[in-house]
Image 1 (tube, rainbow, N blue to C red):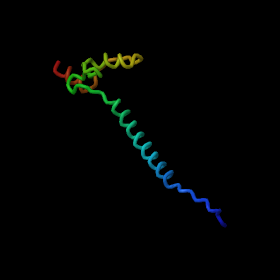
Image 2 (image 1 turned 90 degrees about the vertical axis):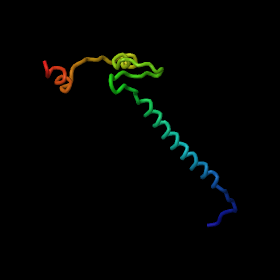
Image 3 (image 1 turned 120 degrees about the vertical axis):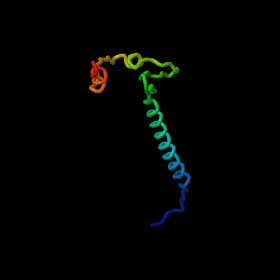
Image 4 (image 1 turned 30 degrees about the vertical axis):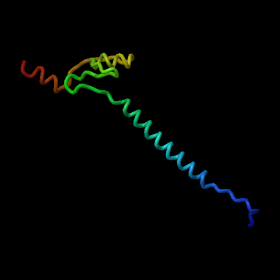
Length: 89
């Protein structure tokens, strides 16, 4: 089989494709990091208030109701808290 002398250098094209693949992987990783950081919720370890994007602290229920209007809270006591509150009475 003979070729008629047409030679095409594709090394630059291959190099570009490899770089594009790396950039896509880097951007995908960065997007995953941003999505993860958006899910972090600053909460006080003691009183459980939530710090909003403006730096204000508010009750968990108020914060959640403001961000998720379809959410309705009900309250109860877990067994550990019930023991603490009612064991000595």
